[in-house]
Image (tube, rainbow, N blue to C red):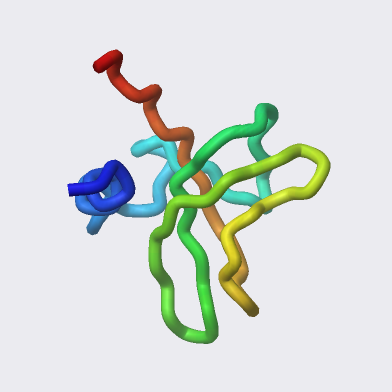
Length: 80
């Protein structure tokens, strides 16, 4: 199982709420570059995904016509 799949399974069904650490993009964007869990809307569909954020380029997730509504900092990877 990939790390991406593990993260997505852990996020499945987690409400987009500040209580769970989700930050609305309308409120603020990440202050450091890195990999984040995101919630996005494409039309009437709302899904979660993993995306990279760069403070110069913004979100890099290759989701055409997607509106990113929330983000969540992913935990650091464990030492192997």
